[in-house]
Image (cartoon, rainbow over all chains, first blue to last red; front, top):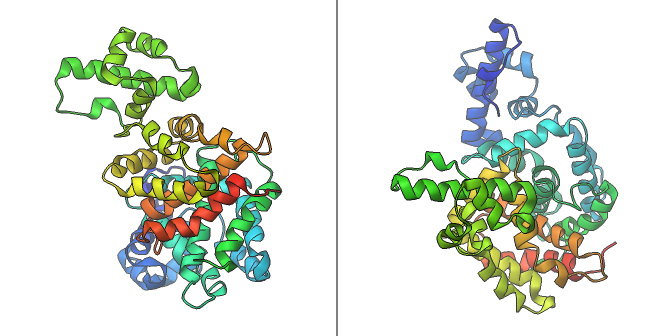
Length: 199
Length: 199
C-alpha cells in the first residue's frame, strides 16, 4: 500500500518492473475487485507479459497478497479454518486471526490496514475482506439461505474492532489480553453471528 | 486532528490564538489524558490566560471535543445513555452511536477517526474513548467488581468495528443496513459484554 517509488535498496531494472506490476495490480484490484481483475489485464496495464507476472508473483491470490504487502498467502490460513467444525468456528477464528496479528508477520498486516483505514478510498481493504477473507466463510454460514453475507460481515465487524482496539489504538485491557482469554470472550460473538438465530 | 496551519479563511489574529490553544490542547490531552490535562497547563503551553481558553472553548470537555474537531459535546449524548436501564444498554447504544454517525454531524466524527486510525500514534482517539466515551459506562457495568474496564472496552471494540465496516470500508450489507436492524443484530453483543456471564 506504500508508494513503490519510496523504496530503496533494490536493483533499478528488475525492481521497477516488479513495482509496475504491483502498482497495476493495486489499481485493478481496487477498481474491479479480486474476481474480475485478471492477470492479463494487470500485465497489460504494467506493459509486461502475463507470464512475467506469474513468474514474479505466482497465483492471482499471491499477487493480491503482495499488492497489499502481506507477507503470507492468506489462503494458507483460510484452509486451516475450512477444516474447523461449524460450531467451533467463532473461537477458532479469533484465536487464528489474533495469533496472526501478534506474530512477526502481523506487523506488516497491521501497517497495511492502518494505511487503508486512514485512506478516503480503502477499496483494497474492502476487496481483501470481501473477496479473500470472507469468501470461504460466507457459504459455510449461509443458513437459512441468503444470510451468509450478513453473518460473515457481522463477524468481520467484530474482528475489525478487535484489530482497532488491540493493535491500532492499543486500549487496555484488550491490548495485552492473552489470546486464549480473548478467544473465550469474543469467540461467542462470532459464533452467534455465524450460526445463531438472528432477528 | 488536522494541522491548524493548513486552515484558511479566518482572521489571522484571533484565529491563530484559537489554533494555538487547540494545538496545545491536542498535545496535552494526548500526552497525559483527559483527566490530568488542566486548562491551566494548556493555557500556559499556548501562552494565553486560562480565562481566554474558557472564553473561546467553554468547559474542558468542550475544549476536548473542539481539539478532536467534534461538532458537538459528547456529554450530551452520554447523558441520554445514563438514563437507560442497564438491560437495554446494548441496543440503545448501537442505535444512538450509529444514528450519530449517520447524521450530518457524523461526517467530521468519521473523518476524525479515519485520521486517528491512520496515524501511528492515535493517542487522542484512545484518550477520547477511554476518558470520555467509556468513563460513564465503566462503573455502570462493573459487576462483578473489577470487570467494568474489560466489559466496556469489549463493547467499544464491537462499536469500533461497526464504524470501520459501515463508515470507513463501507462493506455491504452493513454499510446500508437500517439502524434498527443493526441495533437488533449487534445490540445483543454489547449487552452480553455489559451484563453477561463472561469467562
